[in-house]
Every structure is written in structure tokens, then in C-alpha cells.
Length: 428
Ligand code: ADP
View (cartoon, protein in one colour):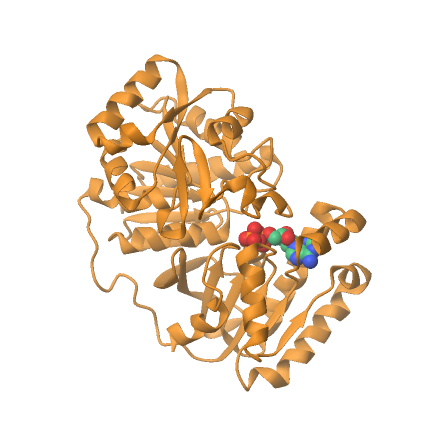
């Protein structure tokens, strides 16, 4: 059997790609699987990232999916498990980060050392830093970053120890920046001290990649690590791996180009504006019209796109400002509005690929999950990075039977303002 070093469980699809991207750049050969595979791994890989769509589903369902992923990864010989969540710690007051972490700890209880894990969404390359347990997005606290208005997981408290403790039975502690600055030995000593205090989960400060590289060796042999994608840069070294050329090569890109955006995050709203401002064709979807007659809205969108695609990339989006999102949610309900829009964009994704789109940008974590499912994509090869956390990928899909398609899954708050144009330039 091909034994993998690292077995990863990601709570959404863009997050999975983000993690896979960091692992590839740090020297691992990575396979990303969409959902828990039904057969054993059949290629050589150092890490497998199982992408789930468990961030906002009911907690019991998130736990069941995560445990199924754990069991599959254990069957592939994974030596360490990495539970990956968003670098903005996206969760509701109840979870799912805390409950899934504790379920994984329970499932691993027989493994020595599984009584303690870490939690840190720090990703300094993308301006996510953790200081004294508080998460910063750029220069501001998480709770002032726009994430307080997220449609599904509004984050109104930046104190991660407090946020996580509210989701957990086990005690939550902190490994602060002063300890991290002293290096792996000091971090390991602090872990032992926290263990002695009965702490089960330790939030870890990290304000730079150097912090993450100091944290890496301290995590050697820890059965379960929970984090954003940043911590991944310090792990391949524990398995004797280092960055290597060629790990991110993809087949040559062909076909038509399109962007689908269901993210209402600040960065995505800026990217939508920039794309429209560049004079490219863009079509806004109205959730209330979708509620009326989704299939005709989807058909109209595809009919709109068809003649334009020959001239260059088109954008179809539901992205909207917080006030508009709140108004829609008040009328349709939060969950129902989200699902309605996701299903419509997913149907459009499939329709576009059936009409020859072979380079597809999808913005939004939940949105990406829906689109990837509609395209029946089961595995992706990770390619070159467009912006931190966002690589191009190549995948097979029954909607693109000859040769598959290039796809990039952009987490809402990732990417520069010109991301939608830049992505295609990168691939060319
Ligand atoms: P992000 O990565 O920015 O969090 P997601 O796709 O994960 O983006 O989440 C955005 C959610 O908001 C999705 O469920 C999406 O369907 C929903 N949504 C998108 N546009 C609208 C809108 N105009 N009104 C209400 N909900 C929307």
C-alpha cells in the first residue's frame, strides 16, 4: 500500500485547495479529493486533502463527514491528520470547528498524544495573523474586517480562545507569541504545561511565516493538527521533504473562459467591480428572481453568455453588498437564500462547461463546493499559484469529457482586486 504522510480534512472546497497549494509549495505531492473517496488512493502522494462541504452544515453531519474522511485517511496510512478550516475561522456560535475537532480527538483517543491539539488560522502570506489569541485580518481585528457581515458565519469576536471555548467541551488555552518566538523547544514545553493544566486545545499565536516555521517542528508526531492553511508550510520538513521544482505543472489550457461569483466578501465585491470596470461583460443574478423561477434565470444566464464567450471571459455573479444580502435573507431565510444561489451558480457552471468553457474561476467557498459537485469533479491536481491561497487546478469532469478543464476555487476574501483578469493571464 502507498502510505501517505499527511492526511488532511478541509471543511470547504476553496480551503482544501488553499491547503493543497501550501503543501505543494513546501514540497509535497498532493492529491485533492472532493468528498471522501470510495476507493483506495491509486497514485503516489505525500498528502491527500479530502475536501468536505462541512463548514455550515448541521454539526452532527459535519462530524459524520469528518470521521468518514479520517477513517479513509487512516486506511491510506496517514501518519498525521490535519483538520483545515478558514483563515478567518468561519464558524457559527455552535461550531463546526470546535465540535469537529473534539470528535476527531475522540476518534484518535487511542493514539498517544491525541489528548492535545493546536488551533491557529494564522496565514501571514494572506495577512491573517494571530496575536495574544486575537485574529487580525490585515490591520484590523476579525470582527471589524467585514467578516462580521458574512452571510452564513458572521464573526463578531476576534478572541479565538473565547470563540473556540464556546464551541468546546475541552479546555482551550493559548501558546502566545513570546513562547513561539523562542522556538520549537519552548513551544513543546508550553504544550506539556498546558496538558498538565488539562487543556485539550491550544490556540497558537503566529504573526509571520517565521513563527509558523518555528511551530512546524513542535508539531512533529502530534496525531491531530487543526489550523488554517498557514501551518502547512512548516510540516513537510518533519517528513524530510523540501520545496522542489515541477510539483505544480499542469496540462496546457484550452477553451473558453468564465468567472462565477457567489461570494459576498469584501475582496470579492472589489474584484467584481474591477472586472466590470475593465469593460468585460458581467451579469448579476437576483436571488428574488431565482426564488420565483430559478430554471428560467439559469437558462437566461447561459443564453446571455453564449455569444459573449467567444470574445473573452464573462462574469456571472450574485455577489452583493451587506445591506442587499440582509434584505434577501430577511425575505427568503439565510440558509434558503444561500442554497438557492449556490444551486443556480452550480447549474450555470455545468451549463458553461457543456458549452465549451475550459477555464473557470469560481469565487466563494460554499459556491465552489456546489459548482465542483455539479461538475462531478472527484479529484484535482494542484497547479501554479495565482495569488496566495489560490492555485489553478486541473480536473476531469463528465461535462468536459475530452481532456478536462482548468478551474480555480477562490475563497471569498482572497486575491487582489484584478484577480478575475489576472487569473486568465496567469494561465496563458
Ligand atoms: P465566501 O467564500 O465569501 O464565504 P461563500 O460562497 O462561501 O463565499 O458564501 C456566500 C454565501 O452567500 C453562499 O451561500 C451564497 O449562495 C450566498 N449568497 C450569494 N449571493 C447572495 C445574495 N445576493 N444574497 C444572499 N445570499 C447570497
